[in-house]
Image (tube, rainbow, N blue to C red):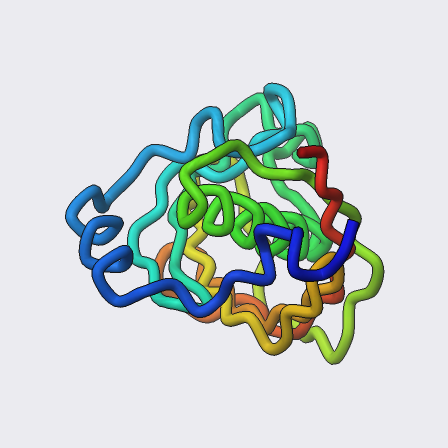
Length: 160
């Protein structure tokens, strides 16, 4: 497969496509992710722009990273960010996510961790898109307060 055959290399999207997508917002993320329940963490796509967007999710009681006391770890914010990227990409393409691998977490810092019942909002911006390789900057808020930020390196699987 060549780079020109890869659907992720079609960025930026035409402006009219963004208008069409924004008319659907907020949009449920169910079915967009390759993850099965309960690991599909993203609930809703709230905003989208050419190289990013915003998602919102509630930490459910069956959250796979929640401890008995309902707390999670900082790695939870990284997973929300990676899944936000996948959900937004699938939403923009109008298809289920290709899936992929989180390859590296860079310059991440955390000031809070989510607990069961909290709302996690994630803003992602694509720093680079090299077909199967993607760099993402993310900022996460828990209940409206900054909780973490950093960069992720992802390897996207093209299953088409």
